[in-house]
Length: 271
Image 1 (cartoon, rainbow, N blue to C red):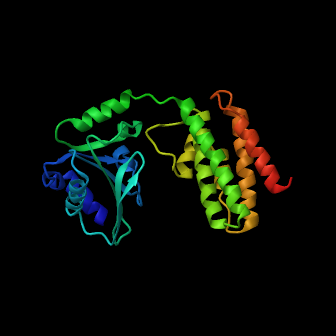
Image 2: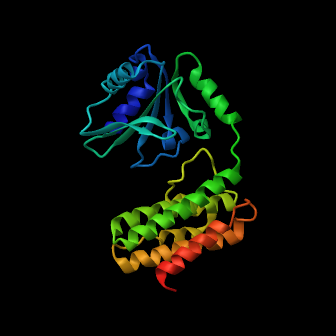
Image 3: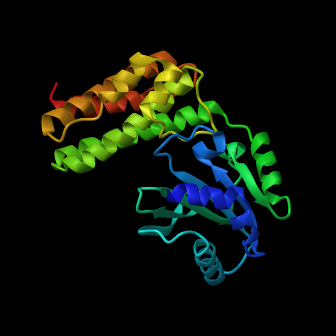
């Protein structure tokens, strides 16, 4: 498999030894860094360059990519918030490799860096970055606020899209609403892990907060029909209201947003 080839070049040092001098750091992220990878897991890499002008920076990305096997499909580099300039490589056996490029003056301190597995650290920069990420505190009330607000905003987008008959767009918003609900539950149940992103599989979510919450979230993704989408939207809002009743006071969430959402959904559903 292509993934085995890439991992072998990483572990035996062949890729690291061929890195140009401007590469300051290389690390695994995601499931391969945590040791939880399963068949089908993609490979996440972070590459850090020394600072340069934008044209040189792009050339350096191409030079590093040339060290890897040639993919069937390549997307990027695409700027991705909190990750840098992301390149996704797809190989014939469906292997997916995502490489996130940054420079030492652009990469941010992020709690998710804590789980990085450093493969190469030319000047100790990556070690200092991980140390800083351990010292960065995340106020869970702020995180709760962000995901709750995200849910409300996405719900309003979903209502607007549904009113215009944009069913596919509405299902996209419903997916984002479900991600927000999952994070709200994790925060409320004391299972939030700031080193992991919100797009966790339901199987992992079930081990964290139980089968009932997992089953309810799993039922929120609709079939492609107006009736199914409407039902999922209404059930998502009901779930959000119940969660705010359970956790909102503890996280000091302003329930006026819940009231606004209820008014809009009621108006839309003609209840």
